[in-house]
Image (cartoon, rainbow, N blue to C red; front, top):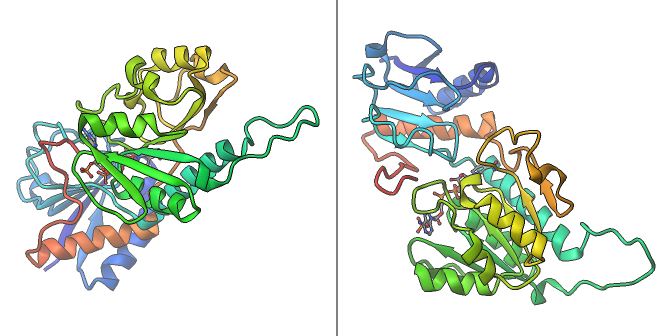
Length: 306
Ligand code: NAP
């Protein structure tokens, strides 16, 4: 029986996704018609990104799952009309993109490439084994980045909500664990989701717990950082530099102080994009699982908000 998947994402996204989705469904042996318009009560699955005007999921009475094209689900998880199961995107190419972004920016700070020499004054950087990198968030993305940096020899520690055990990474959780990771991070990477519990996790108090002169790389979400506190910490020298990919308001307003701060690097939310080829495979895999009566992969916990 043909299933109907409503593609409800950003303008222009369908042109990029149509062929990869058809190819992935064919490989998975699925008979799925992908449409951009349909009577709600005929829709079996919704492939979704919040850039779409669809906000009321109530009429989609037959829909068996909403499959997000985005890893971050803060703009949909709290939608009271969404009663269908929600899966977030975990895409191997997105993960690879994040590993490359984080590794590149950590190495830039580690090697001092953000401060090109203006005089012949050789400052030899320490080896990776003498540099401590901390991660707030050790999920799909944080874990992959932490493992890549541990593989280069860095001392890597991380903090997550639950206790875990991964070779080569010192895991911490809880309030004491957060203090331990902050205290021992020469470079801090934030890869937490945007939830009420993570809002402003980097504030005047937590920034002061980092070693003086620490550097920050934030490809997680803009809400993780209290902007005024970060700017004050940069100006006082407590934080030496920050690379920021995500912001409370996007696009970052033209008059925002981050644009002109000499020790802030702004990147325009490009750390890791969902790639249609690999993401379509993930969508097909999840639809095949639902059809087979198996639980969704990467299902979002409404209670936890991610
Ligand atoms: P994930 O697999 O859900 O991992 C989230 C991590 O954060 C987990 O380790 C989780 O702990 C931890 N966490 C959540 N709430 C916490 C809390 N209150 N206290 C301590 N730890 C907490 O997510 P992901 O796939 O790694 O993605 C992380 C975020 O990256 C996304 O939510 C999105 O905001 C961002 N992102 C950005 C881009 C970009 O281009 N800039 C692209 C994709 C994603 P547990 O392990 O205990 O659950």
